[in-house]
Every structure is written in structure tokens, then in C-alpha cells.
Length: 484
Picture 1: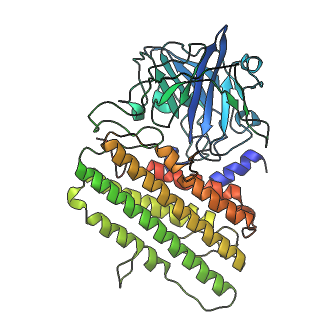
Picture 2: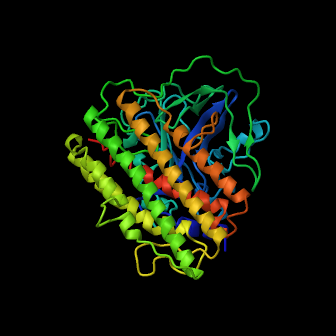
């Protein structure tokens, strides 16, 4: 099986949710832009940082620049088909970089940084907007073919960076955020991302970084000695006092609530969703454990539906507890929030019962819930059962961490305060206590302990699970925190 085909098989385990829920290139951001160095304006590059693993199938995406008024959109690069090696970068992983650069970049950097993809020169120097990405195909999780979407619509891209006195159209998610006041064309400094908040860039000494050779380290270069600027003019948060029309930005749909009641409602929905996910995953573990015991001749049974959906006696199933929690805040919720709460619940339950459970309980051959609505296979050994229960538990903890970051972001945005949601949710380079950091540490412990021996239980498979769960939760953020 080719490497690309193998990744598509992994992607098939992801939730069949809207395109932004999960893709093989989608959870990434522009991390650095430079439009010429002193003495050589042809040296230009745009660097991309992967937020999570398995975001390296980047074919069919475009690098496009808009002029100061946004009336002209010029494509500097279209990456080849994702089904070919030319449409991929060899190394994946949260925090990993890759770079699109002009042909003169390698000769100007020390050590030499060869672009992963060669782009045409054309980044506007004083003002404009740089966009990268493409809409995702919901069936293959790769980028749609370039001839099927408009290069002139910023909403078709994963990330855009508008700078200087740019007056043209922007991605809807970033409307209302102050533009980057600096520009990438002074010849000395690059525009370098601070956080994943829209347009949160400042000037810094350039550090162009490519993806490196297959299974090798990244290559980061410089253009010679550089003294970092002592001041920055870019801000990470909006200066407006009105929060009702501002999107969160980055990869999180939704908007800061327009009232304290709606904030409390949204937070309550998120917390209830987190508890429901944890409970359902526990139900699935008990179901799988009982099925394994039966498979080795022991007597065991477990009513998973009563645990998850409807308990006719106690009415304390995961879904019923969620509905009860939401009912307690009905009086302070908007109609849109209440509708969103139901949609989020149903989307998550479908995902947990379907592809996510199949990815967790993957090693066996006999169905766990033959004829029922729960995917997954009966483990074939005690070790496998223990491994898969642990993987499910880690996914539940990851979901709780991601959702905790979501309501912290909403609370901070409502108060007009900055909050680095991506560091909270993904990887924190200082504390290493981001939600994904903790998941990765638990993953490594499982893999290193030799408990998870099957191919579908290995580190890469667990990374796919993490990306699937995180991506699904991202798409649901506008349910508790809808935009007007």
C-alpha cells in the first residue's frame, strides 16, 4: 500500500463531519512571511506550521497574494496533486514546519534552506494579503482540485495574513481583527506569528525552516547576523469594545457571546459536552470488556444503550445527564444556542459510536455490537483489551482538555482579554502541558510499554485519533458560541 493510500485509510477513521472537521492538511497556520532581503528582493518565502500531526498531504492547495485593495488575486504556487509524492511533505507532527520559497532562497540562507515547494516571486511588500490553503474534500480529506474553487475568495483558504493599509476582503472568521501593521518587505525582518489569533504577527529576525529530509530533522537557516527589533506594533486582540460581531479566528468557528447570560449558557453546554464524552467512552470500555470476557468463555453482559442513551430506571445515562445539564440553563440561552446544543450532542454521539469507537477497538475481528449502532471489534487478548481501554481514556482526557480551552477562550474574548487557545489546546513549548502535549505523553507511555502491539494501536494511529477528535470539536465551537 502506498504511503498516501495508508494515510487515506487512517483518515477514513475520522468523523464524516463538515470539511473543516478533519483533513490531511487543514490544521496548520502561516507562521512566517518574508518578501525580500536587503540586496535581493527576489528572496521570498511563506512558512507553514502544522498544529497537529498528519497535516502533510498538502497537494492542491494554493499560495495566493492579494494587492492592497484586494482587487487582484495572484496565485504564486499551486501544489501538485495530493496523491503524488510531489503533493506531500515527508515529515508530519505537531509543531513541524514546511516552506514555500522562491528559487533564490536556498542560496541566500545558512545553512541552505531548500524550499519544500518553489513559488513565484510576488509577495506585496508594503501592504496586501497572503493566503494559503484550499477547501477540503469531505470524502478524501484532501484539498479540492484547484479548478473547482475560486482563488479570489479568502474564505476558501486555511489561513490569510493581511498587513499594512490593506482594504480588500478578508476571511469571515477574521473580520474585525486589526490588521498586521508591519509588513514583510523591509529586507531585514520577517513577519512572524505570535499566536494563532487572526493577524497576531510581529517583526522578528527571519528563521526560514523547511520540512527536512524524510525521517530527518527540519533545516532552519538565517540570512546572517540579525539584531531582533526591540518593539512590536502588532496586537493579538481586537481593540474594539463590541464583541458581538467578532469571530474567534484561527481554526475555531463561533463568536464571543453578546451577554453574560449567553456566556454562562455556552460554558455550561461545553462542560456538559465534555462530561458526556467521558461517560460515553467509559460505556464503550465496559461494553468491550464484557464482550472480551464472553469471547473467552466467561459470563458477562452490559447494557451499553442504558449507559449511553436511555436508562429507563435511573435516567442517568450520558445523554440524559447532558440534556438535564442543558435544561438547567435554558432560561439564559438563546434559541440558537439551544439548537446548537442538540446538534453538538448528536454529532458527538454519532462520532463516538461510529468511526471513533472503531478506531479505538480496532484489533479484533468480531463485532462488539453485532447488529447495533456501536462500531469496533472485540479485543483478542487481555493486553489488547487493556491497551484499547487506555487509548479511549486518553481520547476522553484530550477532549476534556480541548473543550476546557474553548470555554476559556470564550471567557477571555468576552472580557476583551488575550488568550492563547492554540497553546492551551495543542502544544505549549514552555510548560508542555497543552491538551495535546498531555495526550502525546500518555501515547508515548502506552507505546513504549509494549502494551499496544497491533498496527492500528501504534503511535501514528493514536495521532490520527487525536486529530479526528480535536478537529470534530473545533467544528462544533459555534454551537455553544454562535455568531449573530
